[in-house]
Structures are given as structure tokens and as C-alpha cells.
Length: 427
Figure 1 (cartoon, rainbow, N blue to C red):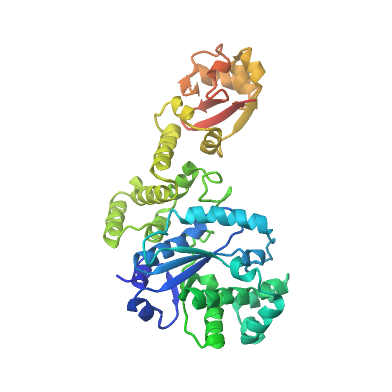
Figure 2 (tube, rainbow, N blue to C red):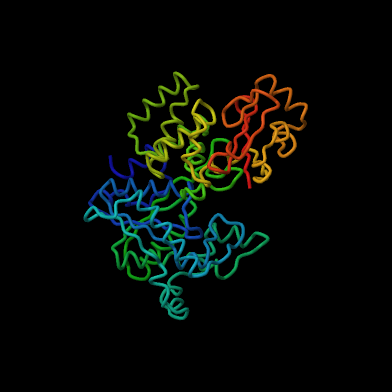
């Protein structure tokens, strides 16, 4: 199965320029995808393009990851309703280093002729003067051509309008393609379907400036079955950086996908072959409550992004909250991991000095914190055996807790019933 066929059966292919598949079938082709350096980490919204590059390399082609050190200073108007904040050179450099370290987890940068390469368009734009740019690039693309693009028309007809900076973006991206075609023999640019207009500007510049041939391929933009945006939660983006999104939260994001989304995502975000996926779908159909697709999807992506050890820790975190793993598991976690595990769970702060002198459990749960709205309700539920601290049932409403009850000298976990958790932080 060739590269295009692979994308097609996985439901990833959107547009492809005539002649592209023929070119790819003739031998190794160099192609690239651009990545936005507005943050020092990629998020799950970037994974579809990363997977495209993985399939491209596995098919024997040479992938280039272009990070937009220059275009990040401008901002792509495609699909945007307003202009982005522009970043400083130092901030961009920091972001580029973070993105490169993440891409190295997915692509092979040392496998011979089709080794992946990373390029930064700041390298060829930093000494390109404005006058030289409009003379050598601008004269080849008409304003009429640029105005016809949807990304331009939609913004110009809107309330906010469009700055000249953003208007020139497609020329800048077009020149990226020309430069890579000229200097790296890159004959193909790939990207999401919203990038089609910018990509074909590059193929047109190559044709008009040097009479060359270049090609374009775009993939589907990922959406959830209910129409909401993929990759967003109430807490914001799901990042690939464990400091921004804990591996536990990352794992839960995929595990909690709907059945319909899981059928789509397992094709796009894993490397499972068709036979394997169809087998998993059959298992899901026979026993939907077992969530076979979601578990296989979450496991594969979490290991790919964070490694097997973090996947196993994510599983333990789930079992800690919903199963029978004891409180000692928290002792294995650092502060960021503890807070990540209890993200979305009510958190309360108490005085460490007060706790060192001893604190009655009723005061702890209904006065110094709001685990219970009243002391009477706390006492009643404790007497009924429905309250635990650090996974141990509270035997008496007269119990007193001191600092030695803190996990890692800082945390206490209160539990009301089986599933209602509260994190108490002593400060």
C-alpha cells in the first residue's frame, strides 16, 4: 500500500493535486509540513500532521519538518478571525527547541537517505530585505490571485479586516516552498485542508519563477462527531508536553472519547493496520461497554508521546481514583503529578502549623475545608462509615489528625463515598 492509499483508507486524505500520486510512486520524494511555533509544545491538534509525516517516511519518502521561526513573527490568517500576537526572536527560539525535541519522538532523523530533517524558515528570511522580497517574489504573484483565496476573502469581508502583514503571509509561505524546492529538492507540501490556498501559492510561485513543478496534498481537519472542536477541553488545549498536560490527563482525554470518535481516531492517530483495527471494531461492536477501541487508542498514543512508564503510571492513577490502589501510590509522585492527578477535583488549603498541633476530623472536613457543608452532616456520614482520609475509613468523629498523616509532607486525600475526592494541601 502506497502513501496516498494509506491516507485514503484511514480517512485522512482531503485534497491532492493531479500528478502527486504518480510522482510518489516513481521513487523517494522529499516533502514537508510546516509547524506553528507559537508555543514551546505541540498539542494534539498537531498530531494529525505528525502522523502524516510518519506515514510519509514509512512509505520510503523523506520528510522535512519546517518550523516557522520567520512566519511565527507574522501569523497565518487561515481559519483565524483575528490577528495573532507576534513573538520575539528569543521566545520563538525557545519554542523551536521544544518542538524539535517532541518531533524527534515520532520521526527517524537518522535512517539514511530518507532521514527526517528539521528546517527553520528564519534561516533564509533573516537577511532577506523587504525590497528584495517584493522584487524577487512579489512580482510573480498578482493581487487578484491573492485576493481570490478564501483565507483572505473571509477576513477582508469581516468586521476586523486584515492587516498588510497577514495579507502577505501566503507569499511568505509560498516562498518557503520555493526555497525548499530549490535547495532541498522538496517537491511536495502537505498540511491540513485549511492550508490548501497557501500551499498552491507555493506551487504557483515555483512554476512562475523557475518554470518548475511542485505538488500539494492536504488532510482532513479533525472534528468531533458532535461538531465541537477536537483537542480542546474545558481546561484548554491537550498538550504533548507533560508539564502542560499530565500523562494521566492525556490518557484520560483519549479514553473518554465517544464510540463514534474512537472509530475515527484509531485510524488517524495509531499505526495499527487495517486488519487489527477491524478486529478491534468487531470486539467493540460485540461488547461496547468494554470500550476496547478507546483503551487501545489511549494506550498507543500515550506510549508514543510519553513512553511506557508514564502510560503505566496513568493506568495506576486511574486505578487509584477508581480502583483499589492504596495511598502509597501518591508517594511515588512529585507535586506536579499529584496536582495533575487531582485536576478538576476540589482542592482546599489548610494551615500546616494548626495541623501539627492536631485537628479534629470534623473541624478538618467542615470548618477548615468545605468537604462537608456542616459539621452535623460530616458527623452523620462518618458514623455511617462513608468517609475516608488517605483511603482509610474514619472510625470515629472524635479522630484527630496531625502532620504525620500528610503524604509527602504536604497532601491529604479525603473521600466522601466511593468516587467523591477532595485534595487537602497543608501550607
